[in-house]
Length: 199
Image (cartoon, rainbow, N blue to C red):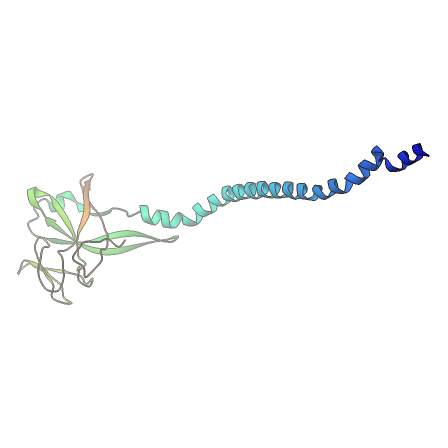
């Protein structure tokens, strides 16, 4: 009888495994969830890297016109250097400026004045009045530039003399290349005392 009682109360190894099985099952879903989370993070990172690699050429393609527009402020020919050798007063010239607007190229005309500078150096002034953008005219008899809109007046070097403009005429960047005077046309903000480019 004593032996039978011991057999009834003692847990066999098989029974121990059956008892501990539910706790093992309860831990398994959490471990799987952690693996799924880690795998999801890895896949998301890899997808992001692939997406960035694929989108880079598209972004470059879309931004190409803006990039070109910023870099292609082309030089325009003003005239051969020999045309200005005996220059003693400002002379008007019309230049052709290439513009890039998005994907569309166009050519516009702008007026400039070539002015004799010190030691024979040529200067190129914009014909755009720094007051409100009217076209300045050179008056040879009076030896000054005048704005027909609001009476702004500048001397033969482009220095402001009278009228509403708050600064001198805008000098443009110029250079001599292969005996040709070239200029980089640019517009500047109006109605302010400082020379501030706007594009």
